[in-house]
Amino acid sequence: MKKILLAGAAALALAVPAMADVTIEDAYARSAMPGAPSGAAFMVIANTGAEDDRLVEARSDIAARVELHTHMDMGGGVMKMTEVEEGFVIPAGGSHALARGGDHVMFMGLKQPLVQGEAVTVTLVFEKAGEMVVEIPVDLERQDGHGGIMQKGHGMLKSGS
Image 1 (tube, rainbow, N blue to C red):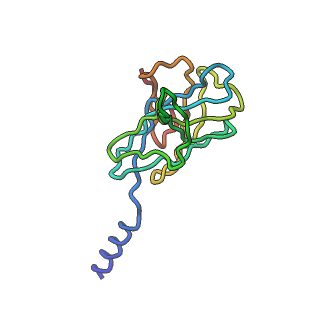
Image 2: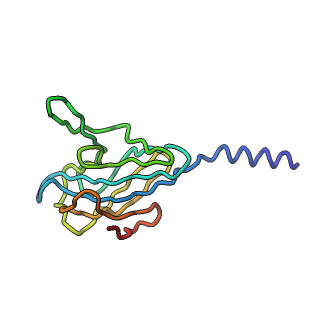
């Protein structure tokens, strides 16, 4: 009987996937200029879990379309923004920055202007960590290196510098 219980427990442990422990740090959203039809969200996604994870989708009601984007160097000083359908790997024990001029969450067809000091609700979808709803502050005056920290499951913004 003891062997059957141990075998069952081992099978159950192997059948349950390990969940990544993902946190969102230093997040903010902005538009290029007041009244612009598009905007973006930037953040650092940290994974303290033992397995890589992948951000595969972002959703929000603030825009007609929300996509994961990056900038590609086309040569000759030309940069092109493009959708990244496979998403972004968040390495185990590491992080992945979504930053201006690089990977980011793109809001296309904003339904209303982004307003300084307000927040936008965004659902981030990860392969292993699942869905995470975050409130991202709008900071149209932001200089890189300043922001707040959001943690999975808390849904609230902690003050940063």
